[in-house]
Image 1: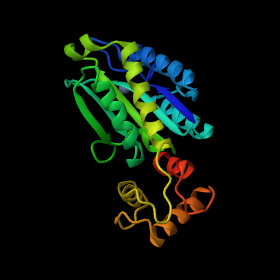
Image 2: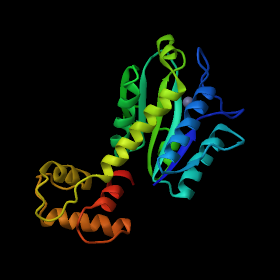
Image 3: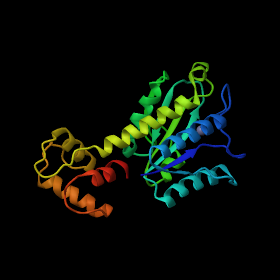
Length: 240
Ligand SMILES: [Zn+2]
């Protein structure tokens, strides 16, 4: 499992928000700790923030390109928020990110931050370059608000990194622990979820139509075509 970690900003021409807290400093101290924890958990981690860039857009292009070239399974961008609110939120590039996004945002909220929820780019707000241009499941974490006194009193880099790590690991483990579904499977709720993800009629019955859709999906993604939805197919459906 390959995870690209993107520490936001931190370039002379791409500075983060600065108020009570300094986003550049905060995302570095959280992102570095997160990478250490993920590596200790056995994940391959690539830090994708560039050492230099000629502009903000060049900085963003490089981050997405590195994750794409490396064929990461998951992209995690670390940011802090500003603008007068308080609490934590996670942005997702597509519905594929919602599962892990929910785990991460509720894990951070567990530290005491207000839970502002998971937000889908394009629907809940404008597009974010790194979410739009990465080809794998991508989330962008807005840890807390640098201009909120309450948030900054709660903020601790070690605890924030731990919460993000815990959310990611919980999400990935749940995906890998999904039951294997095939013709005649009885996991009605899981079959319904599968059907909605495959974009077919949701009736909770794994019959010929579901098997056909599963085979089509497997063929399109280049994995073994057997119509059985096991760990590999679940991983492709939920993360890619
Ligand atoms: Zn930012």
